Image (cartoon, rainbow, N blue to C red; front, side, top):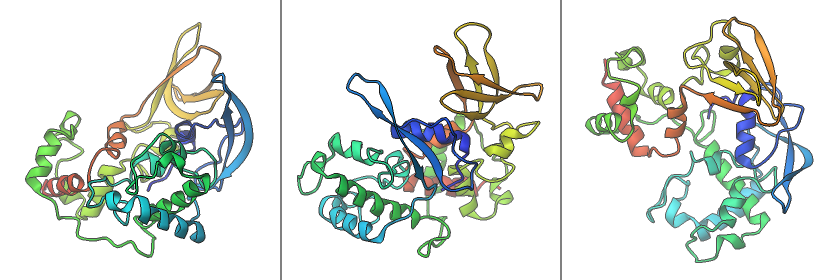
Length: 311
């Protein structure tokens, strides 16, 4: 979908219920990530497990995919459709959800999809999802990963269709209402004024809306964070130790043990996470990230139609 900064790996791993090893994941573009799995104990604490290597772009095993497709057809297709993008049964598009995009069940046992199904989810046959075996979860994970891959540029199945299929008026209403876009933007703000003219390809408007800062020079990513003068969308953090003053700056890296910041004077400081230390991060683009979990395809098309009209 978009490049994942190595400094965000900790957040991704946390969402998987895993712990990061002392040796951090390699910089973006290098394969694979090395992550130390931590396993839960009965008393609620966690014990160190093995170091595992997780591909940044998981490889789909065709045999496992085909087993997953059979399970999907038996248990899921009526609600979520053949491509996991919503079906006649009213189930939502799950391609962009955290459950699917952060899942690494094929590489790490007990990733996101398994616990989600073990907690109970309706199936079309009535079979309890908690009864799915680990092999079933892995098969479904491969099937869903292929559905995600098929939506990406570079896929043999990917084609840029007609983006302008939405309702402009509905997009404007969503922009000013439920989408809460107007909280940060107006149609005449610097970021949006004339956007339909400045970015003539609707598909690029869509990408900028859903994945802002994914490209170079947009104020995010390692290069933007490391810049002497970071962009307005750089992620910042405040580290408050148990005693002494708090330290704030642009977030360069965060692990289980250290937070590395670029301070206002341009210097770089690594702060150890002593017991009782709190870390508060601020991402100016968090609203866009959160939007991915709730916006529908129809709302995306409507918003693009509205933004394209701002010329």
